[in-house]
Image (cartoon, rainbow, N blue to C red; front, side, top):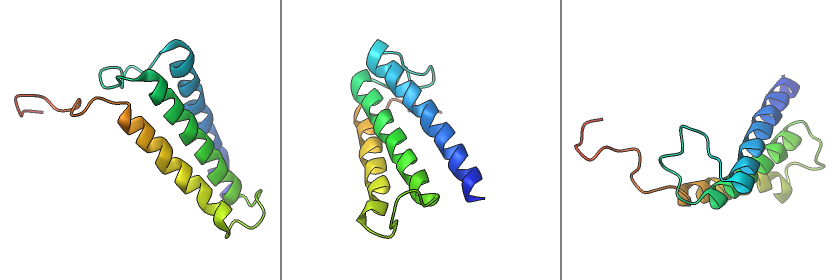
Length: 103
C-alpha cells in the first residue's frame, strides 16, 4: 500500500514540477490560476519546491531515506510549507472573492 501511495505522490510531484518549469521558463500558469497569480516566477519556484517536498516525503514513506525518524524526515514538511508560502505570496490578495459580496 505504501508503494501505491508513493507512486501516486511521485506522479503528482512530476505534474507540479512540469507546471513549475512552465511558469518559470515561459510565464505560463494553469488556466484556473491565471486571474490570481501576479508573480509567475515566484509561483513557478514555489511549485518546484512543493514538488521536491512531495518527492522527499514519498522517499521517507518508502524508507529510501535512512532513519526517517530523524530531522531529515521533517525536511519534507518544512519544504512543503516554504513552497506553499511562496505560492501564496505570488498571488493577488482577495482574488477569489467578488466585490459585491455574492459568490
